[in-house]
Amino acid sequence: MASFASFAISKPLVHALEKLGYTEPSPVQTRVIPKALAGKSLVCQSETGSGKTHAYLVPILEGIDFNLPRLQAIILCPSRELARQVYEFAFAFTRFFPKLRVRLMTSESEKAQNVEGLTTAPQILVATPGRAKDLLHQTYSLDLHGVRYLVLDEADMLMELGYFEDIDALYEDLPEKTQTMVFSATLNQGLKQKLEHYVDSKFLYEGEDFKTASTVSHHFVDVKHIGKPEALLRFLNIRRPYLCLVFASKKEDVATTYAFLREKGIECLNFSGDLDTRERKKAIRLIKSNVYPVVVCSDLLSRGIDIEDVTDVVSLDLPSDLSYYYHRAGRTGRMGKSGDSWVFYNADETSRAKTLLSQGTTFDFLTLKAEALVPSNGDLLEKKRPNFKPKMSEDEARDVSIAKAKTRVDKVVPGYKVKRKKAVEKVHGKYRRKAIKEKVRAQTNKSYAAKAKKKA
Image (tube, rainbow, N blue to C red; front, side):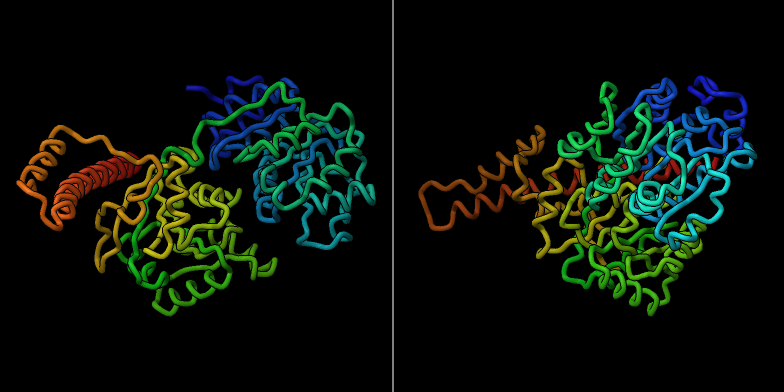
């Protein structure tokens, strides 16, 4: 088994990592850290929850000079919450390296407040792009000549939010030999072309070929025509999750669902763009402290924020940009842990669900009853699924032949084709239900085995 000690990093840094609970590097860290330590600019694509933050923090901490009070590394993040999380990860190392200074600069505070305390420059700056541009490019509050590292974290989100104009302006001020490291959960062609300005992509690490961790199980839940808040209440009473994130695409749906659950006596928290800065900071702290078992949230919480022990993710709807489904699902199953992602739908909401199915992620199908989640054939979604033609077993093929034989007629009579079709479909339905039950049973056994192993 690999360890951080196997990398070309100092013993004090290995010791600090061990004390902070990091003993074995994740796959992405194993592949990226050696390249970064060699001074190579790089682009890293990997699924959420893979340990990307320490994949760049470790090389930065190994490479900067703690004795030199000069800005040496800039880490740019697309949101205040993600920037604060990265800052907290980096700041934790100051316990072991007293001369290490880390600063956070985001829109949480005014420009003048950000400038305060810069008489001694930090070696590492974590910032949102707009604030970094204001303080470093426009006012030159810090000397940039000593910058050795530039990190673009969650680059796909940086592009979606239109931050590259600010990043371009800042990049022009950096030394020519600055090592640039780009990290992103997704990496489309447009983003690749954009990044050519920053990175000599001789090393382009394409992550594993899946959009969420393999430890996440995906489920479609037919809630019939029960209202989504009521369906969620039933689900929570049945599932009893340890920590569940409930996503809705609209802020008003977040507010409505949160209010409904509170009225029904469910301990829960809400998180959306309607909260002010102080409320959002408090909410993140409560979420990470596992104070509430249920968090109703917008997609603001679907990107980058590292929340441990999320066992379940519920999508009350599917976002218009389906890539956000994978970000939602990626809040669970992190760092090798198992998790479940549940998508609620009904007969009026099949279009996006079918599109999601066609993208290759494997789902099972269930129906929400009053007291249980019951396996179903998912026929609302499966009937028109592109290129879906399951291979029949010998037993199923035999029973289909028997059904056809029983409905055979000597002469054409009205309705005989419909009767035969129904008989054949009844056989197919029987075997679909059998297969689904076996799959659910296997997943349940796997989940129980994982929990038993964890307790042991």
